[in-house]
Amino acid sequence: MPEGHSVHRIAVRFREAMVGRVVHTTSPQGRFARGAGLLSGRVMEECYAVGKQMFAQFDGDLHLRVHLGIYGAWDFSMQLPDAGHTGALEGQTGEYAASPGSMGAPRAARVARVRAGEEETASGASGGVVVWPPEPVGAVRVRLLTEDVCADLRGPTVCEVLTPVEAAGHLERLGPDPAVDGKRRGWVRFRDKAAHRRTPIGTLLMDQAMIAGIGNIYRAEMLFRAGIDPYTRTVDLEESQLRALWDDWCRLLPIGIETGVIVTRTDLRGSAKQDALDSAENRHHVYGRAGQPCRVCGTAISLAQMQGRKLYWCAGCQRR
DNA sequence: ACACTATGAGTAA
DNA sequence: TACTCCTAGTGTC
Image 1 (tube, chains in turn purple, cyan, blue):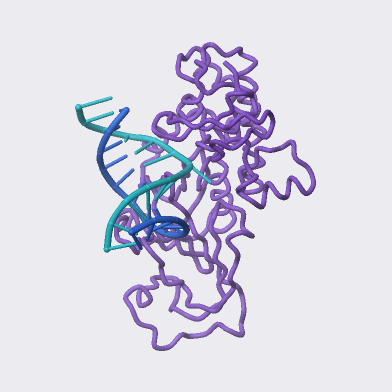
Image 2 (tube, rainbow, N blue to C red):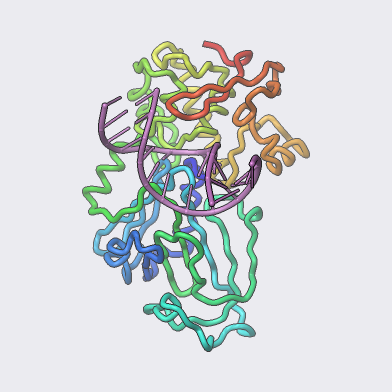
């Protein structure tokens, strides 16, 4: 699910729902039991994203670092106020339900569930009456729980508690992120890191130390939008081309953060635009479209492996 | 039941 | 370049 836009969106959600509150932290799956013990009962003081990584700072200067990898995800459940359905729940059994910590006894409640970072209408809020806190479903590595919000993390590639120094070390290794560095400073950083590299631009855009937050979809789509062949060595690009790529990322990232969708067909308007948003089929220029005709020139979209990932491009529109 | 895929990235060779 | 780890959904037998 996650390229940079999703992670920024998740951080926003944490800021709205949990920053400033005491968080009861557990590891229902058990694989983060030690970290959960360190964090539980502390106030989440900050939460922010840099590239594809999220950092949450808790009181006592403990930092939670989370990287979702290809398929990690945060699911939020919100307790909805509804006096008609709340109240003590009787006959509740099971270890988890019997150990609510400081968050009160399990009780019936109306609960909305949302996959964080994505467009929210798609995953849908149920609002059904269930137990609060919700029973963990699947392999929940971490559960962050406040009085009325529950965030469950599954399948992260990284989930660890760090000291401030350790957290700073990870941040230093990341390239510029438009949402963190801003357009001007970010460009200077990007140019200084990238301009002289001999690496193919298709590889470089995926290197989080060069530019943070771009994943396989944005990579393919941005190179199409720029009309650049993915195999072009970065050093062989005109500075204006490198600049155009940075500027495009500065344009696309906020749209992704705003919508929760990777929108790259920004030429579309009206019903065509809506169609592209609604159906994955029409969403992209080249990503996932191997063998299908380019929407611009009709050339069959190419597919190759680059650094172990699928690379899509249009050999007609994208030149060295 | 099993195979395969995925918007990621670290490590070994 | 290849293998490893993380999880869930979909497709195939």
